[in-house]
Structure formats: structure tokens, C-alpha cells
Amino acid sequence: MRSVLDRTLLVLGRAAAVAAPAGGILWILSAVSVEGVTLYGHLLRLLDPLGQFFGMDGVILSAFVLSLPAAEIFLPLVLMGYGIHGDTLTGLMEQGWNGTTVLCVLWFTLFHWPCSTTILTIRKETGSWRWTALAVVLPTLTGLAGCALLRWGAVVLGL
Image (cartoon, rainbow, N blue to C red):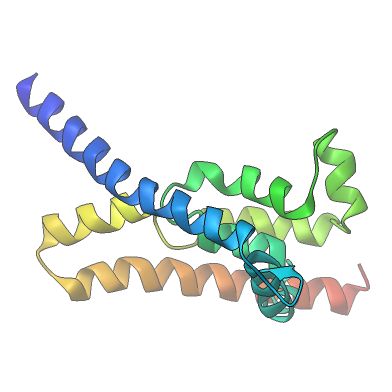
């Protein structure tokens, strides 16, 4: 029991140590403007072409990147990025989500980098930055490749 409690507190401590700075970064991105556009808006524009290539868009890709501290904040970040306050399904459809978008988001949700607490735990338990990097890179490449194939298939099939 003591071991479980110690490990739980350790993981919660790591999560808090990562989540607090992440909240600050999100606030800065949303509060600071350059040329009348928030830094978050600039980030969305920067990521949009890459997101489109993988069957998503800049909002979705930025939500994946910004949810590194905790994967649970992915959907709230997507909704915030689109400015959706009401019916989620209708709002996503109004933003251009279609079957391909949904499949790519689901695929990338399954295959992308782990959250920061998991990354720190992998590093601690393996004692190796190589294994840690592999645990981040391998699922991410699998996710991106799968999304590219899904999008390519949708284009070929005219979906």
C-alpha cells in the first residue's frame, strides 16, 4: 500500500510540475498579440498546412502539441481553438470536420507521443534518453504515417 501511495504521489507531483508551466504558456499564447493577432492565432496559421497534409488542421495539431502536459486537455483545446461554446458536434462540423478528419484525429490520438509525465517516468525507469526518445518518436511516426495514408486514401477515393 505504501509503495502504491508513494508512486501515485510521485506521478501527481510530476504532473503538477509540468501542468503549471503549461497553463502559463497557454495564457501567454492567448493573451499576447502581434500585429493584432494572438500568438495562438499565429501558431494556428503556422501549423495549418502541416495539419492539412495529415488530414487535420492547425487547431487540431496545436491541440495535440499543447496537450503534451496532459492528454485530457486535447478536446477542450480544440473547442477553444475553434471558439465552440455550444453543441460540440455541430460546431466541429461547421469547422469542416468530416469522416476523414475524425479518422485522422482518432488514429493520431491512439498513436502520438505520450504525455510529459509518462515521458518523465519512462526516462526515470529506463535510465536512458535513447529509450525515452524511442518511446516518443516511434508512436508519433506511426501516427503521422497512418494519418497521411488515411488522408491519401480519402483523396484517392474522392471522399
